[in-house]
Length: 76
Image (cartoon, rainbow, N blue to C red; front, side, top):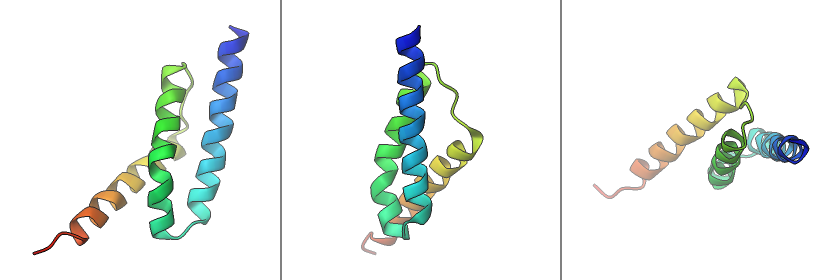
């Protein structure tokens, strides 16, 4: 149980650091960090941790930005 709590704490710290970096980054740099951020949140969920709603909103926003970027670069 202690290892689980330590793992959750480590994942939360990693998510918070990524969140900070994403919020400080320019648009394209945020998209580079999106995959790692999303993976970290998924690992946090699997470990039994609770993902704060602000991080869920950020993940959703980044997903929307990634989709827009993909369609903006499609040839017409």
